[in-house]
Length: 479
Ligand code: SAM
Ligand code: SF4
Image (cartoon, rainbow, N blue to C red; front, side, top):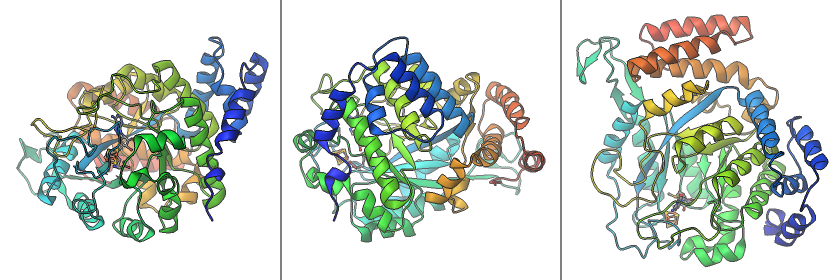
């Protein structure tokens, strides 16, 4: 029998937040030392960190989180883009532009249109997508979701870059074609049944992401109307997905709906519950902040989270659940994203659109506004200037390193011998096929720097050999 209190014990959370108020510097320093052991933290320790306001201690928290990120994930930053398939939704979530009271016209992409969107995303250099749907059993039944996933995987596009002399302005000039494709499709659909999750699993999804939005039950009930208003349906959706065989699972809250300290306790407690119940914690945690949306009558969200608070949240999550990937989206401004990459984020979107058919032109109903409108190449350039290595890797999932197999790898540090070479190989493809000349130049310098940092000599040799094969026209090489 599933018990809400196993994840969210509200009384316990409030008592804990009260008990951990005004922590001493000594207490925080001790917790930071423990965090650096990369074994995670108790929710009591998370409480002390959340209650830290001392301006001298916050940079130390960022340092500790940055160190953990570097040790586990290295310098790589994985890129993806969202793909909105349908804005039809029967739910009336107060914060969302797709809420059912919004009278703006809706759009559901035909499979042909999905293919067109995917082609545009491939031309931008993307290799992994997060496909998004409103909840509508009539318009967006599970079979449509499955068809969309299959269509994405089946779409192949020719590279636009003339670097290899294969295409000029999209026209083929020799038969040695280089094609691009999406190699991992993550999915964000409303909570559903084990049976439906099994269909997603069979369609070959990567991560199944579902946000609790808020762990605070009363707030949840006030903000949701429609099938999503069922708090427990949402809270235990990951259990059903796991039962259906999906073991890469993503969690998150929408910051701004309720007190962020309560929400962070909810996230960490949920992660610990998953680890205890499934034997594997969440694959990712997302940290979206509410953004204005057409048709949502909020000047500010009820519990506004400042930039500084968001960064503090990210650093605390990195220390609390060190092996879980963490995602930041284009909801955030470039400067916040840059700082977030340093203190814990391992995955990010770029050049996103938040409406079905949004890649391309035309005025469309968006789910929310975005704050980083830069094209992919510009984001890549800024990441390179920061000294990070962009990655388009999808290897783990394709080599069945999901769930506990992935976590075991991360925990032994072996991820470094895989992630760095795989990041280098996929980034090399990006540089060959999509990058502008200045990005290519800068990218090759960064690529060579990290190539030299592969410690295993055999792995380094093999990576060099594969980089050459990519240079000569092969694609999709990975460890
Ligand atoms: N409809 C599905 C659901 O609600 O679970 C799929 C997710 S929806 C397309 C993606 C996420 O966007 C939601 O889970 C929510 O957290 C977030 N979102 C909704 N409105 C938002 C807003 N105004 N600003 C930022 N994020 C928002
Ligand atoms: Fe629909 Fe999801 Fe938006 Fe709620 S958050 S209105 S379920 S699309």
